[in-house]
Image (cartoon, rainbow, N blue to C red; front, side, top):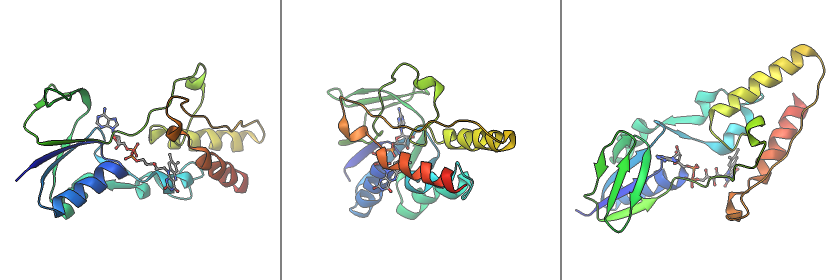
Amino acid sequence: MKKVLILGGGFAGVDAAGYLSKANYDVTLVSDRDYFYIYPTSIWVPTREVGFKDVCVDLKELQAAHGFNLVVDGVTEIAAKENRVTLSSGKVIDDYDYLIVAIGAQKMKHPGIENTLSICAAPEQSLQIADALDKLIEKGSGKIAFGFGGNPKDTSAVRGGPGFELMFNVHNL
Ligand SMILES: Cc1cc2nc3c(=O)[nH]c(=O)nc-3n(C[C@H](O)[C@H](O)[C@H](O)COP(=O)(O)OP(=O)(O)OC[C@H]3O[C@@H](n4cnc5c(N)ncnc54)[C@H](O)[C@@H]3O)c2cc1C
């Protein structure tokens, strides 16, 4: 049985894992999160219309449903020519026939980005936005600035829609 190593437990990684397990490949999926985060429905987390857990699916459940191997660990190095992947724990995986890299797109870290919160970044930031909104409501007035940006070197990394979706949700709140 051919071995497939998939890096990343988002839509791309999980979909590939399910599909290839069904096609009788020996699949191992590596994700630095132990849950699959449903970004599209996370737009309601900051306004508390859904809970954080409502937009997470335990990767163990998906593993059980599809029969792939799961490793919860970060990828620190990919040596494609040597067929070797190194993980945060120091573990090395080098016995695969095919490699799928599905670790998502990263945005450029523009100066000042550290002062913002985004629903398109680490999942936990949605909860930080919710807390910030609570504080603003308690205070009774204040200012909120919305915007969106991307990576000029990877135009697929732009997430304009969620910015508008979040803005409308906050407006309704
Ligand atoms: C708020 C929001 C709303 C959206 N709404 C929609 C929508 O309505 N419709 C639509 O079609 N698309 C929508 N999108 C876009 C869609 O969610 C993305 O295109 C999709 O998530 C990309 O999937 P991916 O698997 O490529 O990457 P990601 O979802 O980013 O997954 C990458 C995975 O890799 C893991 N990972 C990253 N680095 C490492 C590492 N070093 N080691 C191990 N694991 C790692 C991450 O933990 C994650 O599990 C939305 C996106 C956002 C942010």
